[in-house]
Length: 447
Ligand code: URA
Image 1 (cartoon, rainbow, N blue to C red):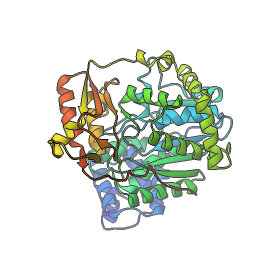
Image 2 (cartoon, rainbow, N blue to C red):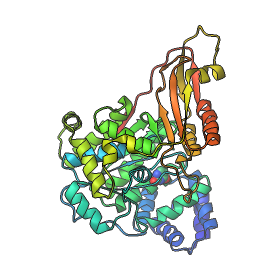
Image 3 (cartoon, protein in one colour):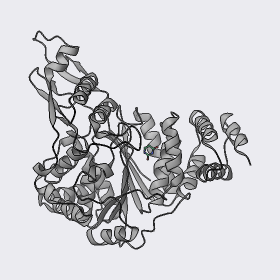
Image 4 (cartoon, rainbow, N blue to C red):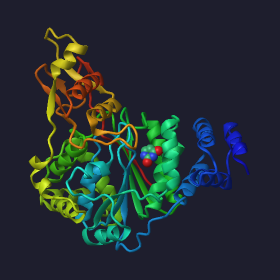
């Protein structure tokens, strides 16, 4: 077997067998296949695609490229969740404590933000003292004690994905269904949970821009899970605007606290409760979605979910007094209010007499606004400012009056705030006719 022949086979639309796929994955991971050949292979795969069997073989080869986490030391049925990535998505911080206080062990490995998307690990590091890197032994002990631990991915979990993802990121080969499905599922399979609930995002802030592609990705991942003997459910949710009101690391922790105290924004709560319900169902702790939703609402109302969040933060070295008193969190030096008139002057008729509504949002641009403020990374090495971000007061479909406060930008540099302001206002469209809001949950795909 040689790499040149395999690149040519895929370039010509051929179907690769398991040994050929394993040869490519192992060769690239151990360095015998150089970046330039792997780049050519990825581009051939991008255009020619892979069938379900090839995608599953690719996933298994990537999952087997490093260690698999052994969760057998954790009592009970372990349930994991994963989002395909978005803007303002803090659902893990809400869902984790809810499940943990309902007796479901959640042993979660999460990622950092890259590009316009955020990552749970960066958000948790906004809580002073919080340790995102702990030993495997401490991780398992914490899950047995608290039912919840969230750590960064260890170096040797699916190392093939780490290398391939870095190359995809610079060769315009990220948004391919086989490559995304294998990337996510290789990590999830290696991370060892019995059941996995996937949040497949669709819209302008997601990798999948339309519902057909999102459904195809969801089906692919559910099918891989089934072949690997795991119980996988995919929920398809909207990412045409930020999820919830806050975007930015510390701001998102604060919003998660508000949600756990029962004051969450409607759409964010609907996604969080839906994901948590399917996780409860998969854990066997609820026998219907309706029952699961009841249990979830109960632990939010009686304060147990918020208490669990504090217990989890303390267990991982964080100072939970910040969650009791969110005013303690670090503040930015500057803030800039964005008003309705900023949109009306740019897109509409500012002389008055017309009623406007926010009609469209290029959500990737909102992620970029947060990145410009300092809250995101363009390269893995970038250092981020955890305090910056955006608070939104309006969502798509909302009425827009000139004096309305639409959003507030939080930053530590006036130049960056100015750039972010232009980017933010430029990301929206307005209309003078009332529009219907997008659904938040588009559908569920399971075994
Ligand atoms: N998230 C991943 O982990 N991998 C992808 O390819 C896309 C999103």
